[in-house]
Image (cartoon, rainbow, N blue to C red; front, side, top):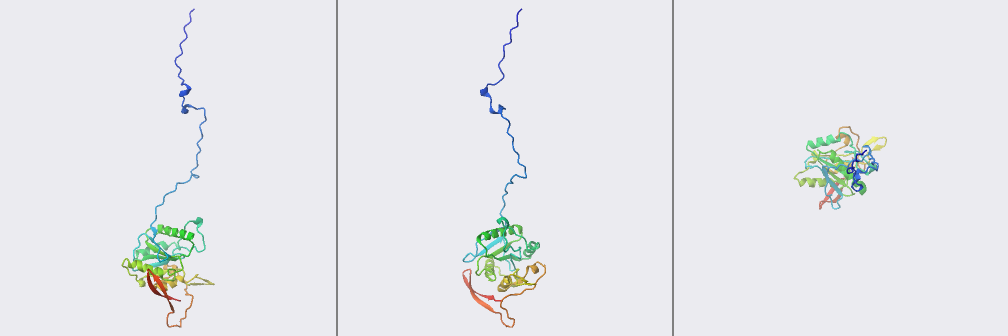
Length: 276
């Protein structure tokens, strides 16, 4: 009995080991991809556009008067000058900024609207401030002014800040003289009768031994020659009694003054400063 021949095996469909790629090798277990919950993921930092405020070159021979502008403030015959701390924003005297970052809070919520109203009424908005603080704190303070400018993005204003005890520091009128000079460069003469200054250092007496820390702001208005208002009056919140401390004798029929030399913008002036 004859047997059928066994079929010849065909070519193997398996590839030799040398042709096996890493993608075909399934001997290793697939690695587990760890996922991070969005709550713990680090957000990407957003690039912030520069605000409308910028610092200009400081004024004075010793560069002791900081000078900055928000938007493009124009000179006007009517000037609404305001103190900063305790008038436009809440005072942070003796307090430290959180985490060393600049921050501020309006003195009252109505302040931005009032500043906008003054601007739309034709006033040039001027902020004047005494800032005798250390360089590190001054850097944060300057950044805070930039934040204020970002909020007041439709209100042009100019700010001057005295950082030394010289002719620019209130109640000395050096900062006002600089504004007069800057405005004259735009052919604008300031009308003092139509201008005013707002400040919280007004010599007010509140009773029970409480009073303003000084009357520097009111003295500055007297030395400059413009009307003076407290923040409460300017922002229509009421008023408190004011008292100018220091020598004052109503029996005198003349105003006691002191004549002192003061150099402003290269010219020597003689200031008549009220001693009241």
